[in-house]
Image (cartoon, rainbow over all chains, first blue to last red; front, side, top):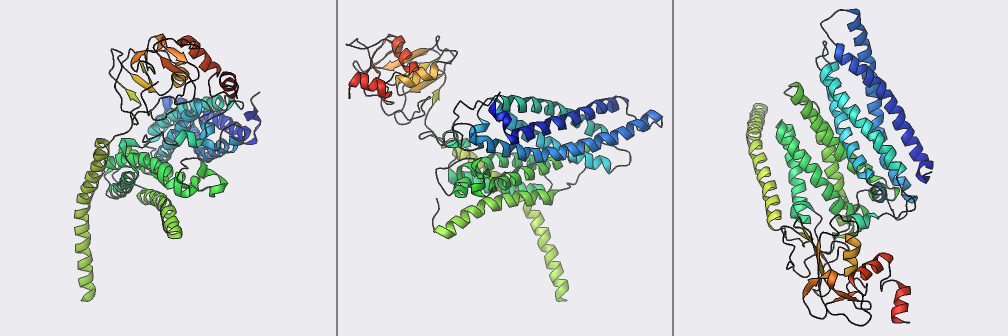
Length: 322
Length: 183
């Protein structure tokens, strides 16, 4: 049997995911029934029963989705912690690329995070209307999420079952280190231009968000997410590690760096997904004003401030940049 | 009076800012587009793969500006360099026969591709499958396999060379090194 499955973190993680899936499966069955028979204008006993069941489904889903947020952080923690069992891995970067399922699974988890936040918005708007106007929107989104959750559970087991503890994997230096002379940055950017783009996009995101330019905001925030990833890995990360050659998105999650990676990536992803979920839900429902512009701005500003402060502190302490 | 003036000034200022903000957004978007376009225009990264070579011919490449697709190192000299051209028109570059053999072994186009090698003796590109390989030559990745057009003593053919690379019997292996070169 695969040694990885004896790891406490993996056991806890897989059991939790399986339990949550079981709860969601119940909610899924009831949701399908409700979607077929739902008629809010009807006063029949069946409709009353359905409304009670809808409340149950919402409660289950809300609970499961809240736990899913915590489990995403725990998944990252688990991957990082089992790096001691996989030869060659120094952090989560090596473990996540130990087989073909890891990267897909991580990507799927972020997609689910975005969809879950979108569902939360619909739930919020739905519970604030007397007639449950957005109940069907919410249920369809839930069904889509359920399909992804099934895929996620399958990938979870496939990923952990297929980590070979006898097969060496690449460490982060091999994965994110530069090719000799080749540029890993997108659009042929160099570091100064990458940073210019990073700060310009941040300004654009804040301005468009606060002026309610919804479509421009979505495009600019997605581009900011993409550029911010490279900026953290290839520039800000080197100041977190205080080593110009250390380029890795995972090592900063370790205790050696005071778990700062959880905050760096957390602020970026939560800020982005709250903002995009807000805009998308307002576009779907047709509400002109956004709900959480300030929270999105705070999260993204905290992310930029945190990254920048590492560079500033390093420069103030040493008088030079890396 | 002063308070009233202050309020009016603040109101006027907020109107000006509100009018200027959309303009600022346009400038920021222009700035972002400029940065991306300038970077893409200046994008002079080393080459790793060439496309459009449907005739599977030898392609000229820039030394010190082309990456080996297996070991990722820059190719510093033409001698003993290799090119793998596939029917789809893609061409990859290598600095050592061992790199090429390790890289191509799991590729679907392993048999259909054309492999070129730049020989040490005649100093020209020939079919790598017809070349002869010395076993103790100085090569980029220290495999020892130097390509030649003409057979010399102890040289081996392409199949033997590939087999030795996959078995790890290169000059890099201390046991093989000792066997071939002595102490």
